[in-house]
Amino acid sequence: MNFLKTITHGDNGARLVPLPPVAERPNPHTVASLARWQLVIPKVHACWDRYVLQCVSLAAFPDVPPAHKMFPEATHEFIAHAIDPRFPAESWDNGGVGLLGPVNHVLQARGLSDEQALAGAEFLARYFVEIAPVLIEPVGIRNGRATVRDALATFLRESGCWEMPWAEQADVVAAGVD
Image 1 (cartoon, rainbow, N blue to C red):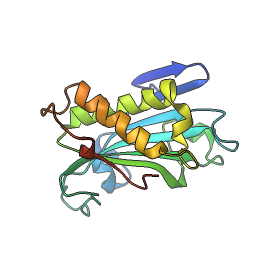
Image 2 (tube, helix red, strand yellow; image 1 turned 90 degrees about the vertical axis):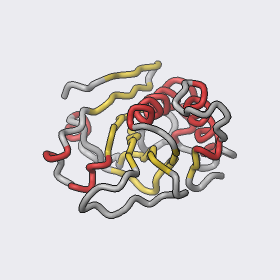
Image 3 (cartoon, rainbow, N blue to C red; image 1 turned 180 degrees about the vertical axis):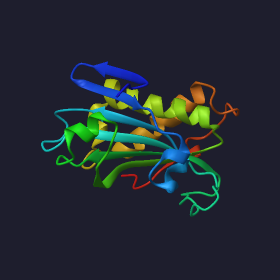
Image 4 (tube, one colour; image 1 turned 135 degrees about the vertical axis):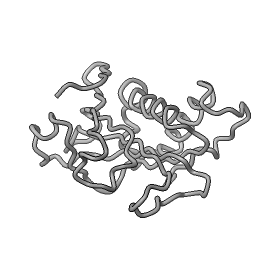
């Protein structure tokens, strides 16, 4: 598979998976998926080292159930999951995912275009690979999810993704904040 972009830092890495056109996706509910980053972050968990970070539009789509929004103005969601260690390496290498529950991170933001959300997803991929790999597994880390939420909010604000320079961190909400 030809990945659209790769990020490496020591043993850690991320790659942007090319998503098929909406009409060719096996699950019609994936119409909202904008990006899928596959992450490899060893030494954070004893049993697995593969993760997926997905960027999703929360817009309304015909024939698709409405998105579950944490607040009414939410426009995009960023979801990080561990990959089941039994998920075949060949399927992974072809861009597939086999999710392991529960979800590691769910963040929702408001006021973003799809392009800005994609920039936010790339920031999170880099954040987990280069800056704070341990936070991909937030359980047991005090304020782990809140730290990731605040990092994304700061990136979006400082990169000009939000038109309002006074955007509050409440413009990004994390589920299950510690």
